[in-house]
Amino acid sequence: DIQMTQSPSSVSASVGDRVTITCRASQGISRWLAWYQQKPGKAPKLLIYAASSLQSGVPSRFSGSGSGTEFTLTISSLQPEDFATYYCQQVNSFPLTFGGGTKVEIK
Amino acid sequence: EVQLVESGGGLVQPGGSLQLSCAASGFTFSGSPMHWVRQASGKGLEWVGRIRSKANNYATEYAASVKGRFTISRDDSKNTAYLQMNSLKSEDTAVYYCTTVPSAIAAANWLDPWGQGTLVTVSS
Image 1 (cartoon, each protein chain N blue to C red):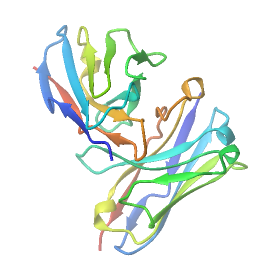
Image 2: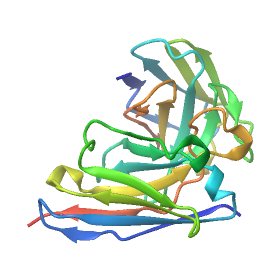
Image 3: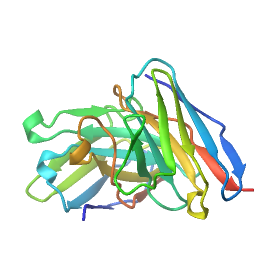
């Protein structure tokens, strides 16, 4: 199975800050990576697919990059509605696996 | 609007069985793969399994933790997917989400949207 490791596990930031989250795969997955946002008590929402493609309706302050084993999700200017937990997911092979999550908290 | 609505969760004893349903609307259900993902309280996301469409022979894949105990099926006439859970263990306690792959970006198993989830509690 491909292991996905996210860092940091949590980050405290202020509105307007730039936030970067890293996701590492235990083996190369090309660009077969997605990012999801989950707010408390809600289902996850797809933000980014194919490592850097923005899902329809997602604000442009979200961006993704990387390939192979190292990926990043960047929020260019954090907004109040962005405080949530973010997960990466590899779709290169079954079983699909998720990172442990990164909680973005208010500073 | 694409909508997924799970039902069937509840309290079940260890060793028991439960069937979850996922009613879909707003997209071509019969042509879409359906996935189940679970999340224990305060924990991360765990993929459970997937069923493909009739055109792909209803092929299924499962996580090792549920293989042999859980079965995913679908009824395209009812636009509904199912998760049959047998031999339940306490570690199966979680919110169970059904989700699908957007037809516009169906090259891989990107999951969107998701249902609201249904809680399964395995306890005596």
